[in-house]
Image 1 (cartoon, helix red, strand yellow):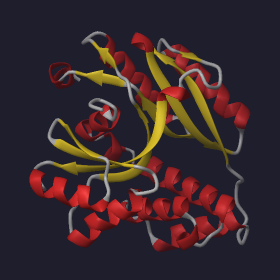
Image 2: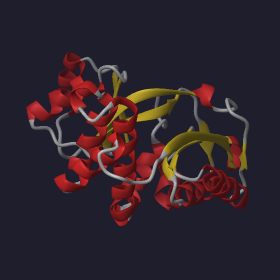
Image 3: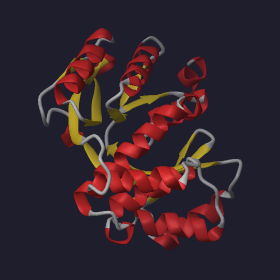
Length: 247
């Protein structure tokens, strides 16, 4: 499965996540609101909401912000009504692009996504054109300098993880969506720090990018994630360590 989360590794390396903290809070609030609207405001009975709240706490979001987002989702407070959509397309080098959107204006979101894909050498595809390549998995990313590899492997497999993958100086723990919370709780109880823990769309096959194409795909991914309505972007590209060093 090497390379399936390469975009996440690039973001960590470039410090993109830290630089876009304001956008992160907006994304988390939208996710909490939608999760609460779909399945209620009790995280015990709403796994999606529970995961969103956990991510918000990890990002040091104030509790008041979390509570307000839940109440907006359940209708206790007034707020924008966000709908979830997925857009599919292609980027440079034949890469598959899957885009999650939470928006209160579908027409704006679709137009923005189409424009960015076209501007960066890609194109918007029909529903189903690339989504068949992806399946949902739990992904927990750890800094290799903070953990012992043998200990992490033992802990994760005992907790029910599917696999542990090495990605540069990071470890990626892969789980089924159903076991994600259990494995994450095992890390929390053990006191193991992790960079991120999320449900993500994972591609089982990858496209290798050369030194010319890789920067184009990275710029496309960055531009998509900069869009107001875009929550997450996934792709199926892989980049060698040599090319990664040039980014």
